[in-house]
Length: 144
Image 1 (tube, helix red, strand yellow):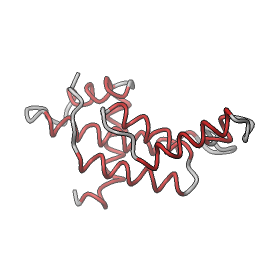
Image 2 (image 1 turned 90 degrees about the vertical axis):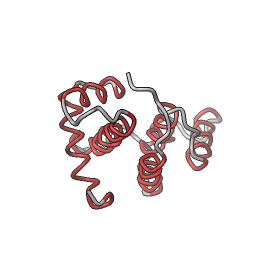
Image 3 (image 1 turned 135 degrees about the horizontal axis):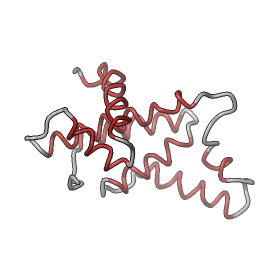
Image 4 (image 1 turned 30 degrees about the horizontal axis):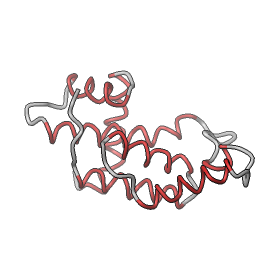
């Protein structure tokens, strides 16, 4: 498995996207921000730390009735699962770019998708599909 070290530009891009999604009401974005910081051995962003603590306190102190009220329902009523794959697309692409930046011998091939799959706990074929979907989604922002 690839050692988890720092790649600031990719993390900054992901953090900015997640913060924007959270500010627009996507509670899962907060959970992804905390998860990604922990997975990459990075500090949890201040906004995510404060929002996470507030949300947990809201449940524990019974200001809300459920975890879904604190963090948002995992899926909105009537929402197709395909719409929820945006996070996976971005995560697979950014994880792939991170691995490529750390291992100069790595190519965008089966080995990369296996490394992404291992890190994100998904199948290599899923990682490959989401990697290319994420690349298409992020192209306008990355000048690629």
